[in-house]
Length: 432
Image (cartoon, rainbow, N blue to C red):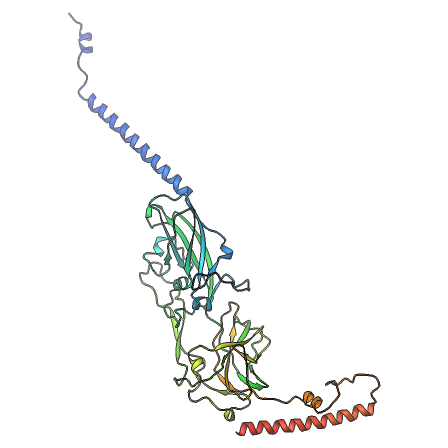
């Protein structure tokens, strides 16, 4: 007969033990699953940590013309890599070489741009293709070495200015557009997993118009002058550009019309859902002289006569001279399109300031003038047989003082006669 202790040891296990075993197994499986997820996450993190995008040669990006051909950039170091109005009007593009590493299937690459201080990697600043702060301007290929080309006009669109000129270009005062090259892990466009940025300086708005414009006649030349601008003051003026119409024809309009000058919108609420309108002001165009027939030579005074030509009204006048610096205030024009000016032919001329970005500013009102032969005292004196060198100094020590005095008196008499002839000629010209 078995003892009570032996019988107790032979009893079956407690009914609750199988449940505990199941719980232990379930816990073990959960732990294994957690470890597996952790390993996958760790692997994904390791992949993201190796993901990188970089723009190479940022300080010397190649520039392309409207047909995709290479161009020579401006020589001025301050504006060479920047964008000016002519770059936009010429439909230029900028080429960005890229290197990309650590990307995986399903990753997405995008290019965004903003001219504000906000970060385009923040999804709150780019809720759609275009938003208040950031504008999508393209994509790029996810390969180790690639390049992408962005139109200058697309970059300027990041200013948010919608008022454009006839070439599709906005008026932008000096600003910086930041271009973002971003890769999003798994195509989820939230925070960028990798990025690189390139700042591009832009300025498409030239200086204000010059004042005090005069067009003076010369022998086969016209000299245009303006009020001095000193050291340019608050304006960015580094020189001036003369513009000419070699065959003036009447403008169909009675004036130059108006245009809108816009600046970028001020800082807005980052959570705003719509694009704020830029600050725009309607102003009169330069060159708003009354239309009508082109004046004849008999109607034009010595300082020129304001006129409005079809060429200036359509902003198609050609460059015909320039000057650098801020101390000079005249440009002598003796050729237009490589052709010399002809005495007695009426031309229309104007002038505009130029800035450090190479922008031509507001063009002055056009002035009609014609070249004509002019007299020069010393040239006329020598042509009449005079032998002096043309100055106050007397060449050679053997000239008697009496002869020198007599020469001065004679020269003064000739000069007086020439001055009277010039005065009479100017009076007749102004009276015609």
